[in-house]
Length: 216
Image (cartoon, helix red, strand yellow):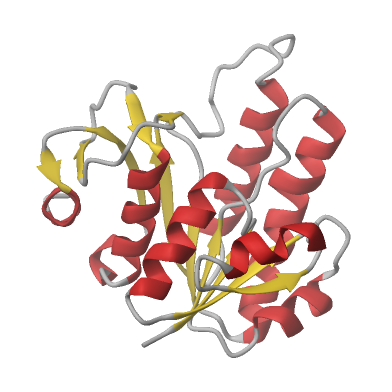
């Protein structure tokens, strides 16, 4: 059994993830901004921790994740406001990495997106530009830390039921993937040291998740 912290605990992926991890016997702490979401989070088996990561500094974040074995970033500003996108998806994410290092939480899983990279090519006038910039900066910073990191790059997210099957690969074209399967991939990589130091792009596909991940 491990102690696992999830930042962005009320998101759709995070709710699937906390239910899955709790069901596996792990102790899950779900950091949430809105105390009104605490009951729903607790219903997944996780312990809700009210903590607005947009406002908290490194030291304050470190105190909330200290004693955990792994940290999963599943938060996001939700788009629409570039300033808040940078504040959450870049700045708060980077503070969480510094906090993890300070708190001795060495395993870090970042839920990013399929096309995340510094040369993402999204035009400045595109509404998606701020998100692409913020995620690229956060992912790049994570790669330069001493953390045992894995970055997940799911394709366009759906609300379809999970299939437990994905496709991965260096030359993978973008597709679609259910949020439930993103949660399953995040849970799977926690126990797979061979995924450390990897950016893993994936879609729903035909291969069972564990088998697909081990094929990398």
